[in-house]
Amino acid sequence: MSNEKVARFNKQQYVVGLKETLKALNKDQVTSLIIARDVEVYLMTRVLSQINQKNIPYTLFSSKKELGEYVGINVNATIVAILNEN
Image 1 (tube, rainbow, N blue to C red):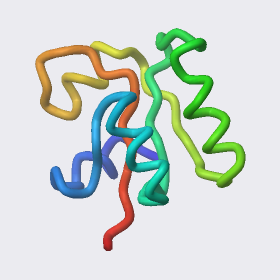
Image 2: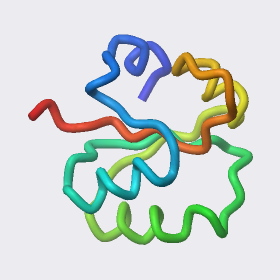
Image 3: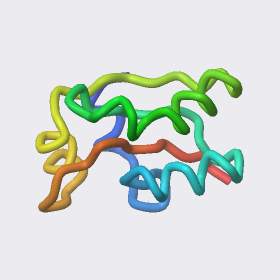
Image 4: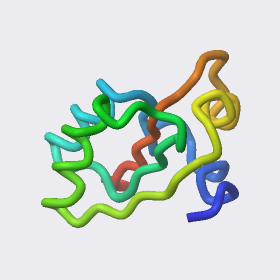
């Protein structure tokens, strides 16, 4: 997935952060993920387990800092979940 694709989504089409991503995964609302390359693996074990079970694709982004900036927040972002259109 390209960075341009994320830019076209509005705030209702994605969530940012591990906690919100896990909530969306549990509700089967996630179509794909963007994960920062510099995230600690132990933080992602629950997410990785679910996306492997559900065959959800993911893309790696350059860093937490840049991912946060890209989605318009002033803090680091470990993960962004792209949501279903429903």
